[in-house]
Length: 379
Image 1 (cartoon, rainbow, N blue to C red):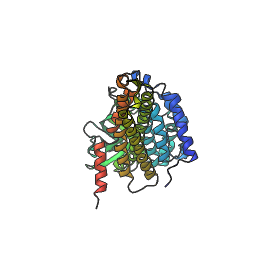
Image 2: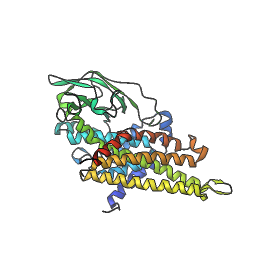
Image 3: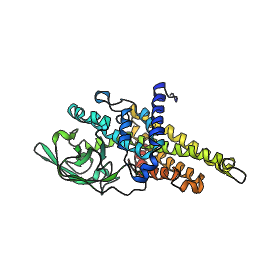
Image 4: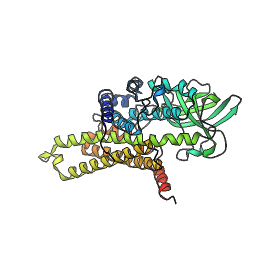
């Protein structure tokens, strides 16, 4: 067991941190206020290999470990939580094609996904099936050499802007065994999108419904075999949960650093507020909880890399703890800033708004507890 990063990992972490400092942090407030999806900046991130972090090298991926991905997302989210989180989704979709696609699909889709000339979205959630994802009702009916898809997906990041949509649809029986995954290009006839949702946070990426009305795709666009779709969707979520936890960790760590600096310089009652034990204890707890979250996330990432039998449970534990902790630490950092923390002149309120949704997506934290309990109570 070695808790030290190696030379390559330090280089990767520092490169991501520098990119966040130079390209994301100076623009994050504007992107949030004006609801700008910074595609050009995301493509700059792709030039550094951040669009296919754990995609194989054959078609342009970086072929890094999940631990190295964790380092990258932690650093990127210090600059802009919403942009880092979208990169996580794009990476998850790209990894699914690389892992479950045949050679023709990988050769067709991956090169442009790696440069983000093609942007991908992951489409599982529906208006009537959130936590109970296996009850989804979108249908894909076989018709000759293709499938006809009908249904609606909800809360899809990148909807209307992304060029590829990984759609989970029912091809067979009720439940998880009857679901398949399809790659649906944006220009497919019958594919349309709802209005951009008005969200509390994550304003630097669009979120909308994906609507399929007699949307025909060729058999060649099915990912894996019929009935494999739910397993494919779930396999992507182990890494996705670690990534989103790292986005919480990075955003909250940045908020903590701001609070530590502010309390050292803000004077009340004749001394810096960091001189009061109440502030000291709060900062001590924040630092402790962030370190605990970091260790859990790195441990879960390493478990995915080694295919540890407990990887799903460890990812759920890390996601639950890191996203709850991240929101609490960011909120405490806002509190330490007093009234200034509530103003948009400071980044604290944006970080709080952006981190809140992490306790909901990639499986709610209540579902994380279900996954953990199921593992712990196995006999």
